[in-house]
Image (tube, rainbow, N blue to C red; front, side):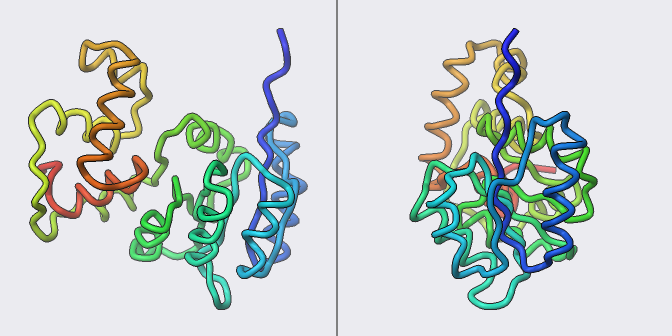
Length: 213
């Protein structure tokens, strides 16, 4: 069997020790399945770095000197929209994470995660799924202001599954439809919610109280 492809990562973070740690530990803890191919500690250089090295994923620290991590996320999404962005932070405030999702990040991971724990969520992001820690997801899903979006029962079931991080196969089994139908329904749901990613859909719908208790 051919070896699994290596996940190529770029890191946008102004903490050199954190970046160096990832460079050393990711290949060792993932059996060579993930590696850092570029890094910068300057948020204003993030987009140009990604354009040069064209990684599969970019890890962006949200708490960086101006222009800051959130603007870096937005710039990366504008210049290289096919590259997926994972926001990271050492803080517990959900607001920066929500802003990063709105800026185009596909996922959020705490910087306290151990290197050996990073590969599964990174692979999930590459497959198109939103990845959020349970604590952050609960914070984002607290009901807030009402929303004009009216979801039917099937759409609400799909949204709950997406917010729960279930794969396309799992959702298809739960809803008794094909994987192709799940993909079609997900695309239609994102359009209805006027968002561009599953992560943003879960956050937006949760804040609006669309997911129930």
